Image (cartoon, rainbow, N blue to C red; front, top):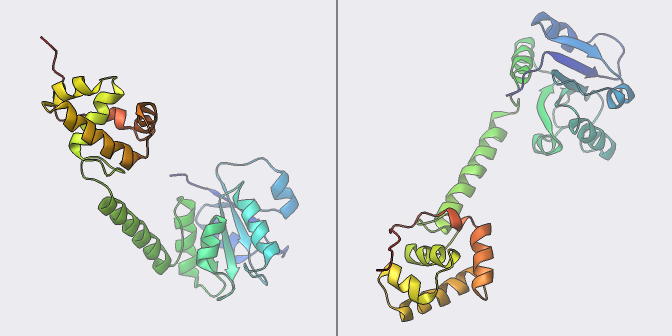
Length: 227
């Protein structure tokens, strides 16, 4: 995780701000930059942009575009944010790493600076909790929709064994011998496999198996050598 020891402050005010004084008090260097200077300077891996939202709203296209452009070059957080003027979800989507409100107390500001300088996000707990819940929900849905034998497929273990052998160039008779089943059963399984993978022939099945990483699947049988 990246750590930042410098805040590049972008503000409409030329006067020193509380953010500079407080950041300096915990050994974070600060430097005021205009927007034009920021876009023309070299990227500093140790620097994070502190963008003042005083008198601004993130819902305004100009402000949102500017924040997003900065976020493409630098890690950025916004400060002096008026309550209700900045949707946390929108800010996160734009690449903003944290939000500091204009009415936050000094102890909260110091906590925010420390968290941000350590490379962590600084957002309301409810938003981070929602994002984690969404991630967990998606993971559960993927697990429920996948086959336990192999992720991201609906193939059975036997069908996976057949795909693996077919990918090795085995014909139906050779597959039947390896799995101790009849050639007719192999043909039935292949029909099911073609339907599930939407492959029309062995060439397309081989392409599908490579894209799905089935070639790295380890079957639960040992390859037999013919006498």
